[in-house]
Image (cartoon, rainbow, N blue to C red; front, side, top):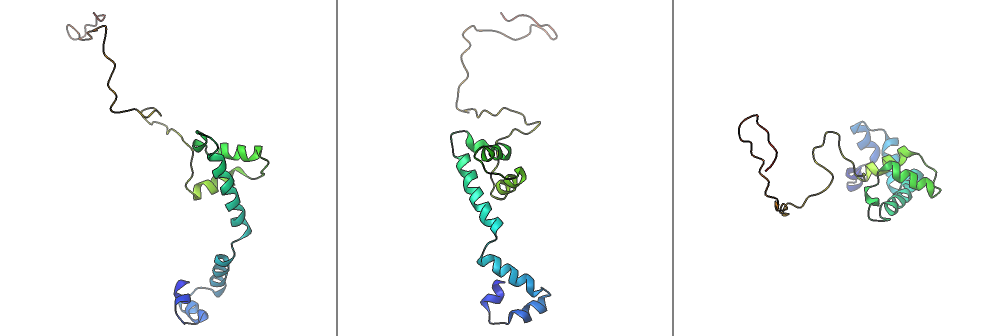
Length: 135
């Protein structure tokens, strides 16, 4: 498309050589000039989704089900999968823990020192397979 616009070749000739239907070229050119109603509606919905996810401290962790529910509470009628599609195409996702993921969701401070052992417990065994209470 940019090749045809950059050079002075007739569009019909270039498209025929490339084997692309002319209707495809003109449809794509018109879409760039005037976006479809769905694209315009999606842009408005994206703004609303971003407002919901910026509402308070933890709202940025909201996934599509919670965002969809909040939109429904605001009176916006749309499908859950549409919210999923809009969030997915713009790289928005909620916080989640994967199954089998070792470790917690808390980010620990690596510079933190362990608390001192004020009782001075000794957990060493006197012999193998001998367990005793800490002394």
